[in-house]
Length: 334
Image 1: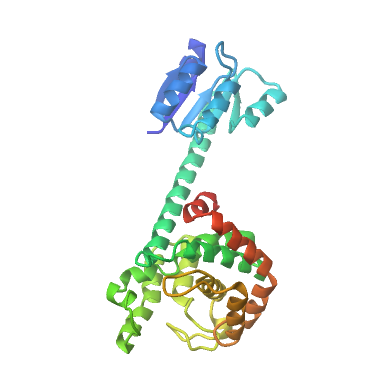
Image 2: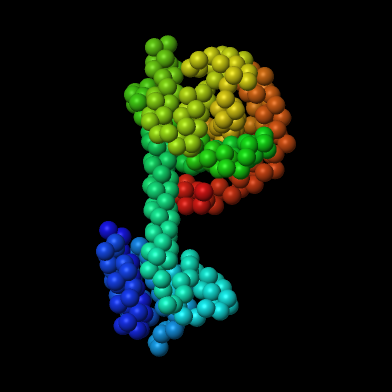
């Protein structure tokens, strides 16, 4: 049962809200602002209904302090007040409230507003869970690559720049930021002896290694969200080559999904320009020349040309990642 903290210095007001909400929610009460600030971090309510005119601290001051405390900053606050001037409402939103209910309260309005905002809280919880799953699947695909650092996340940022330049809509580009890091999820089904082999793989071992694209596709296809559909597509096709010499299906040209063509370039660029124990980082100029050599055989030539055009944006991303890590992108991504 969802938990609501109700804050008001008038016992009658507390009783009215109690009667409206008691059958639907677990209720906690505070009769002043200071008590609210003590109770909220301890009980972690899902929503706070907050009066404004109180003798010790006003609701505005309480809301400001709630938003400054990391333990309570994400709790939505709805002001419940007899102050009905538009300036009062505006100030409420300015200090961080999500809604404003006028007194005397109407039971249907209170119930409806509370339900709406708790639904939004639930949606945010699901979004955080999805991002956590994405983070884990992305990291799982490179669990044994102890020296790759933030490669998959930085690569996704490059891919998003290229996708936007290619004309992808904003929403799909945002999906790509989250989908691309899962491109090697299938490697969790590849034996360590092959992943870490310090030699050239045999034909049989290479066939097993190539299987990671289909394994990744099967895993990621278990979820039907748009992000995971895109991730599954990338996982399956990012090793296809423009000339048809790639795997798993030997697709060529425009038969290769755009997402995989985009990620292929971003992946190679980042792999070349990052330092590894067995190689120094290539210069940007060297990496660009290598990608240009792959135009028409490994890569979509149009995208190679576009990648060069947006190179200033790519370099800005590269600079940004020198001061960023993977958890940052999970926190900031849509």
